[in-house]
Length: 117
Image 1: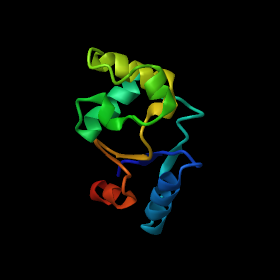
Image 2: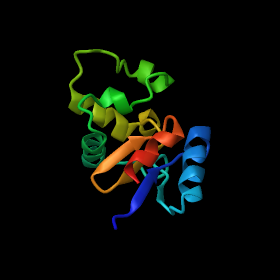
Image 3: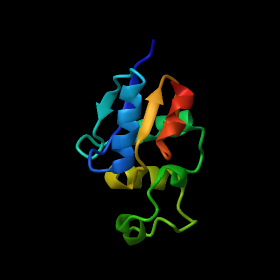
Image 4: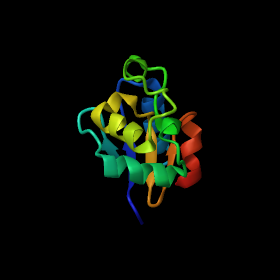
């Protein structure tokens, strides 16, 4: 059985709720505190594939000040540039993201991650 990972921010209520839900289901995920251990471009690209998305903005926190400050809403930006922005500014990555094998789900709402367990 493949391990289950959660990209987790302990200060985020949705992230905590998702982790609690997994634990209630008997799952002990590998917890990746991505703000302390930032993800690289390859990891982020891999997670996008697992989420089944091609537009990096679908896994970005578009309301963050950093998103506005870096002018990431500019449609001229290439997907690679958006991925690099997430690698350089981990706060931009939506949370939590649960990864299981070749699938991933954003835990908004937390129950949505149950599809991939």
